[in-house]
Length: 285
Image (cartoon, rainbow, N blue to C red; front, side, top):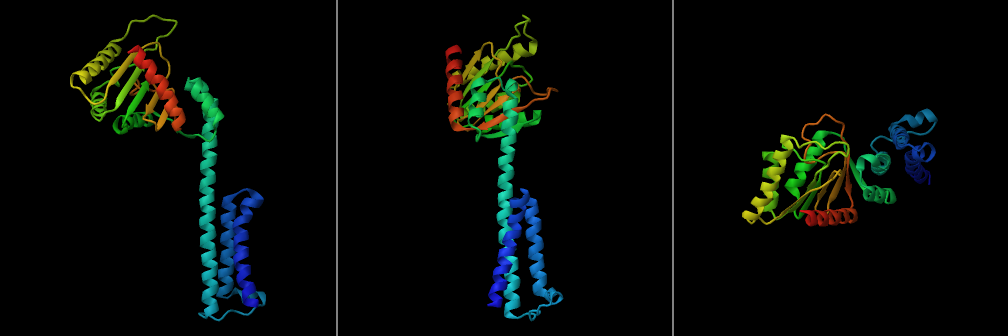
């Protein structure tokens, strides 16, 4: 009976230690510390410190000695694994909450009321933040390289800094795979009526040439190109994700401005936005 009492006590106290930090202090880190200390106590007890508490020392290398050590180590390992998993899950949930809060407070940068309203109403949407130029450029070329059915790109302007040889090669390869590409651009300030710069005219000409080449070479995919007063900055890959933010996809290759965008992984939203963009660009191409 005494042996069974000790075995139950070892298991229950280790479980209590791993639970106490979160339950009393809302901290998984404290749970790990408490669980470790209690497990260490029982391992040390088994190895001999029980004599300092007036108890009989378990005979070394006896069956009970091995069993009690294994019990303490196994209970510690299982509990630590569970708490560590819960800690990681809790951090991911908190991280998503923070990203959504940033998104909601960043509505002006998003410049898309439908997307902002959708995320605000569906706060379990999976989001990621893009904080710098290299992250934006990486997902831009990843999209061109990985899309299987369609790509939508809205940009305020288009320049030859982006519409360069690398872009043209990547876009042509996507067309060869059968990807349909929808491009919209053309922002103009309401306060100025400036003439287009050379790098804008060159980009325009190259985009039109790509449209023509896709037709002439009868590539699997098609390009739909529309120039209109657009201020939205959107990138959509298939039905996988939509990226909204401040980054001009067709003009920004080495800008110094602080850029921030949000990748939204939500099939319902992606399909809805893609449908709107595709129809508008087709009707205006």
